[in-house]
Image 1 (cartoon, helix red, strand yellow):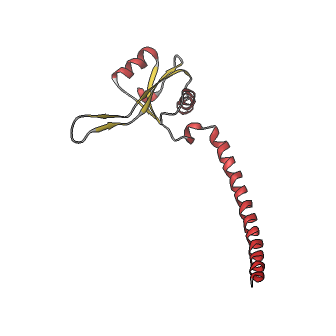
Image 2 (image 1 turned 45 degrees about the horizontal axis):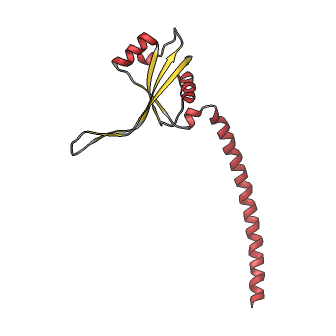
Image 3 (image 1 turned 120 degrees about the vertical axis):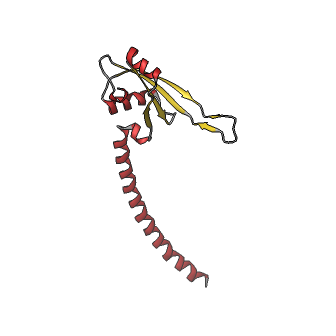
Amino acid sequence: MPIKWFKKKDKEEKGDKERINQQSSSSISKTNKNKENLDLSKSNIFIQKNFEILPIISEKSRQLVNQENTYVFKIRPTNINKVEIKKAIENIFKVKVLKVRTFNYKKRIRGRTKVPSVRYNFKKALVKLKEGQKIDIFD
């Protein structure tokens, strides 16, 4: 009786090997497709990371625009560095960026009421542009 059991198992193992080979060939083609997608997205890092660039328009930011040609943006997530911010702003607004300064703001619970409000963490970026260039959002 054990001999028949081994024979059946051998047949099942052959079928399993064929299934594994088929799956591995399909997974290889999937990885090739993923590599192609990654190559396309490397050029647009800011799209891959899904980050937001929101202009901060206030009296202080308007003074910076008028005096120093510096624009203020709120950026999420906070793990994006200055080089990526510079590339993103140059690509989106078609301007030349000279300098980027960043500030990290931590999450903070505000108010002493029963329902406290929360300010979530974000990064603030001051972006200085080349003279003569403008971003239309701030006008």
